[in-house]
Length: 367
Image (tube, rainbow, N blue to C red):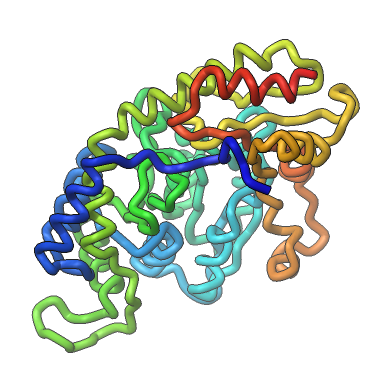
């Protein structure tokens, strides 16, 4: 089925094209070139950290963060169950055990009180994920980390520009990881980045990103690394996109307000939350469907919208319920995450959306 309104799409124009053409004409199209360093420097400055290390994607950024922090076999990493599977995957990549935690019912991210219950002598790190653009409760998470001597890796893949108590997400933990996939707030097609204020960690990430090659002795490898580099072509897109990030964030927030205005009185629909301490960037504008009060199920609503050429997405499946991860959560139930997953739907959220398009989308929900 062809969709009239996609769930997400990038907003690119002459600025991106100009940069890509410049990269092509320079012949620097692989993992060396001036746009890479420019993107790293400018994005780190935007977030408010000293060092940026661009990567091939957001998952690679998370993997490198765990490696740089020397999380290894036998360790445990606390992760939310309601998020994309890459968060659990990277823990498994390094031989650690992902320890799943339920969601907070009010704002859908990892529940700090439930996270603290999961800490053991083997716990090495916690990965809070700022889900669908809403920040985690970072004060509580950082206190837990301090009390138990844990590393904090912030997964900011879905939350470029989001704020917790007036401070940008990514600036709280030891390392922040971002994604620039095609549906993110700014994009490089594929791509990611690790950010940190710790120079030693930044240097370790750079080495592991580039096959583990010694920076002082070409083609000499002291460690086993990975080919997790971003290309100059991708970074060229990123530099142009970064110029527009504040505009994109404000458009996302405006779109959310319009959705709220049309849906606030629809019985059985819960709106995308924004806590008093949060600046939600609404990466994907999301609602919950209470089938008992609304009249039809979430899945039926998805079908109805698709029939009207409106693309949507269901929420992520809780990771602990999927076959590769069940062994890490034997006899565990996470009722909040499971309810959110079964009731949640991501509505079209492109910054290109018009008020009239949102009115039409919500008309199919309001009936």
